[in-house]
Image (cartoon, rainbow, N blue to C red):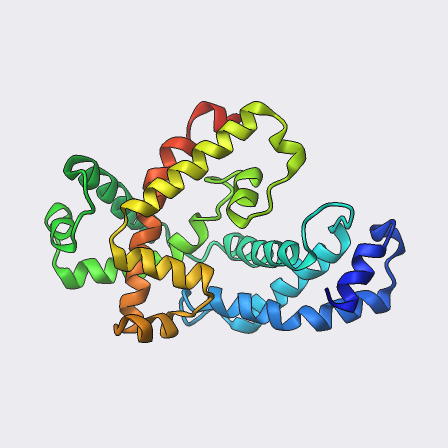
Length: 261
């Protein structure tokens, strides 16, 4: 544990007693983490989105994490900070609403089509089958995936799709005080099981992309080198995987019980 982490852990009343100098030290120490998260998000956004703007939003998220972190809980500050930084960046992107409605509708169409085909076929749908169902060419389908990638980035963490507890579950930040509620615990278990089931049904390359991106922290270019495919193809595989998982999770998350939680 770093000296700054120890300072955080030892504060009896963190919100009111934190020294501004300590706060500045924490911001400096975690600045590379903010930049790393911002770069990962920016790699899947249109070129007109400025990296510096994302970093600025991330710093605001880090400051919020410093103010709200509770050292009496078991969560590590680094894990909590990652959650708040990423959330602040995504919140700002949502607020800008820079994704055209037409693109959102196309992304939903792809998601629904994957769900329809894979339910009927009882296996992953191929690109050719998707093209036939959507009545488009391979190039048009890949262009559609490229446009939908930014929508999949936001929607996988969208508050309209995942509630706060669900997002904590996804980020490994489960609040123990919530899980003592039997219904909440069962609800989260259903979501987790459905997610595992969905990942298990993905084609091998899509599973590998998710693993390398989310667990090994590789960027799209690095994943492309591992798989010996272009960065654009990695982006397509990632978007396909996310849209498929959203389709499988939607039935669980849109149930009346989850809507009320």
